[in-house]
Each structure stands twice: as structure tokens, then as C-alpha cells.
Length: 608
Image (cartoon, rainbow, N blue to C red):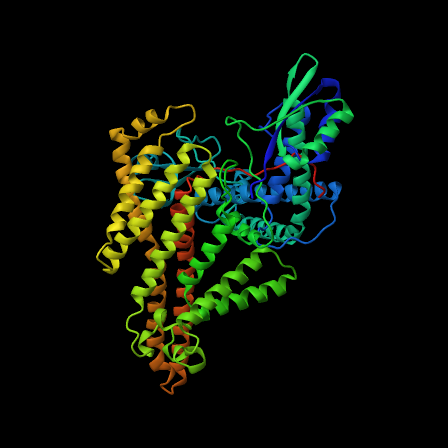
């Protein structure tokens, strides 16, 4: 259920704004209408503090689990100082290694020697200078100076010119070599490398304390939000004001707070122009689907429908059919149970997996699919639970024939029923507007097109006469009511519906109904593919498992393990690609849902 909201407009004296904002934050029910972007020295300081904490937090290993720690602002700041200090030392060490690497490149053509030896020679009257030049230029120097070629490449010669007493050096610019030789530079590089490794190890040791930084960041973020509001409030003379939204149930509480403090408060229903946050609340059963919505990061808009229950029911069914294997379902159930016990706490996510795993087990039991094994499917206790009409291995049942058409038929029935429910819900949602009756037209067309789908895909014919009448009648209803708007004459709305461009769009949408129903066959196709993969890997491993060779049996076991693991991963992907799609696109599309909502986040101070 999407909670109804009230728009709240607050007005109070500028001299009272600090106390007023603090009390509104303590109430913790008002969602600010906009992100205030004020400016003040305090806000600048708080923003800088947040950036500093975020930098320190980002330096810690995200894979390390955070310890439970008691919050202390001083301890958090001290930890941040320590981390940032280590980051600075790390940066210096990395820059030093980069400089050493550059020096090593410069030294390489000259070989390894101690630069201090040059100073010794200079003290004894022999000076050396190093040059890099072309072969032609170097050859010109050799006749006038004492030259020593150290090394050469295709492009240049690396040489030394020696001079004693008053002798001159060439006018060419000499190469300034590093202070240390190659051996010393390599030692320094090893020292810096160890320093970097030590700092990184120290950061890993500090990583379990990242929870302290997260709590401090949460406090600072709240302070930033508060100061942004405080310094960004609209003002008029001596008054300040702002707007927000709050649940209807909190209206009396806020009224009493305003009366008690002498504020001006206007509570009104949101208008069509207002961008209202969505607060979705459901009972524990329907709330099981919330973790999936959180993963998908979707939320219905304030003026849309909450389809949590519909999504939960249909996704559970889709999960069962797409996984289609009681063995896999049992694995999911056991893994969820083990993780739940290890975590020592429950939650909607675990409960959702318990439900989905159980659904997969039920479907797998009814179809006789246990890890794609014919042997398990034919075992008497399990075979007795199978419905032969939808059996994964129909050859185990006399006189049944191929069960594929039965499952395809089920897919089309499921699709038609779900899409008709969407149109019916949309009808009641749009009442009392005349445009609501357009939904009944689409519902009627869906019912007729369902028979065409059965004929085209399953060869179930002939198409009954009433199916074409349903399509035609539904089409007329859509034309008549699709353009009916408030304040517009009924017959003018009908004429708008007869617009040629609109009729062409209507034709395309009608074809879309056919593809929407047919798209539900993916429930059969993906389940069949998963079964075929499991059967194939079982067939590959079977000869090895009975060969009598230990090596062959190990190989067979690996084939089974890897094959079924691959199948499970592909099944998980298919749930997102197909199971979610049928709800988010086909079903939601017929509900005219855009999932345009954003979360209700009240202005409040939470304790760290």
C-alpha cells in the first residue's frame, strides 16, 4: 500500500529558525520538498569533514567485515587522522619509487658505478662529464677531447669526456646524472616497496574499524543536511519558510507541534504538479517482495499502484517454472537455511528465498524433475507425486504423450489472466473517469486474442466466432473511451479517438497484445532448456560413474558438479531476464506503470 501524503508548508520567524528546525528534525516525519543548497562557513566546514571521512573510509578494504564498535566522534576522527596520515606516507613512497624508476632509466646507458667516485677523481684534478649525442657529433669530439664511449644505440652515443687542469669541456650540454648509482637506487626502491607493503598491511588491519567511520559519516551527513536546510531556507523580510510532505497519519502530530511553538502551518493535499515521495507499507507476507525491489532499485510513483502482492505471487510462480527442478530448489532451501543459521538473524530476504525455494520444489515434484535425472523421476515414491500431464519425462507414463503443449497452454493461460487482471485493476484505479472504460476494451481484446494465440502456436482451432467479436467490440470501446478527458465533451472525445494517427497507433498496440501473451511461453522455453542441459550433463557423466575406475568416477563427479553449477547460474540469470521482465514490462505496461517513484526520506536525526 502506498501511504497517502499531505503537503506541509511551514512559516516561522527567522530568529526562531534554529529551534524550529531542530524540533521538526526531532519529529522526524517531514520529507523536504527539495534538496536545499544553502551556503555558510559551517556548511563548507561540514562538507570538507565529510569528504575527509569518505577518503579515509575508501582507503579501507571493502571486503573486510566491519566490527561492531561503540560510536565516539573523537575515536572516529582519530582513526581518520591515522588513515589519512598513512595515505600521505603511501603517496610519498609511491612518488619516491616513481622518481627512482626514472633515475634508473637515466642511469641504464652508463652502467653501474658509484657517483662518489667521480667526486674523488675531481678532488685529484680529473673532472668527468657525461654526454648523450649523435654518432656524428660524438666523432667530432674525439679529435679534440679525451672521450670514452660507454654505450651506444642506433640513435645516440653515451660517452664521457675527461679533463684535467685548465682543459675545457665541449659546449654541448652535459647530462646531469642522479645522485646515486644503480645498486644504491635499487636498494632504495626495495626500501620504498617494503614501506608501501607495510602501510597497505596496516590499512587492512584498520579495516574492521570502518564501521566507526561509517557511523561518523552518517552523523556528518545529517549535519550537512541540516545546515543546507538552515542556510538555504526561503525568506521574506523576517520570515522563513519551506515545504515538505508527511504521511496523513502524522498530520495531527505536526499540527500540535506547530500550535505549541507558534508556527504557521498549512496542510493540503498534493496537487498534480507536486513531486511527492513514495512510502510503501505492507504486512509481513506481502513485504517479502521488498528485498527484490531493493535489488532492482524500483519504486512505484506516488500516483501509481502498489503491486507488491501481485509481484510476489507471479514472481514465485515464475521462479518455480523457470528453475523447474525440485533438486535445485532443495539446494536453494538448504543454502538459505545454513546462511540464516550462520547469520543468527532473519529478515525478509531469507523468508523470500524460503518461499521461492519451496515453490521450485513443489513444481519440480509435480513435474518429476530432480536434477534432470530420469532414474530419480522414475523412483516409485517420487513418481507417484507427478502430474503426468505436465511431467518432465512423459515417457515414464503410459498413454500420456508429449506434455509440452500442456505446459505451453498453461503459460498462455497465466499470461492472459495476469494481463487481464492488470487491465481490470487499471479500470477501478481510473474510475470515475470515463477513460477508465478504455481498460475494459483492452481486457475484452485480450480475451479474444488469447484464442488466436492458441490457434497460431498450439494449433487449437478453429478460432471461435466470439473471439473475433470480442476483439472487434473491445476495439470499438477503446476508440470511444481512450481520449475521454475531464471537461471534454463526450462526442469530441470520440472524434479524437478516430484520429488516423491514433488509429494507426491503436493497431500497433493491438498487435502488441498478441506478442505480450506469446512472450509468456518463455516460462516453458527456459524451463525446457534447463532440463535439457541437466539431462545432457547427466548423460555425459553416467558412463564414467559406472566404469569402475576411480579416475573416471572422479571425472564424472566433476562433470556433474560443473554442469549443474552452470545450469544453476544460467537459471539465476534467466530469473532476472525473464521472471522480472514479465512483471516489470508486460504486466506493469498494462497497468500503465512507469515505476517513477522515489523514496520517502524524512528529515530527522538518527542515533549512530
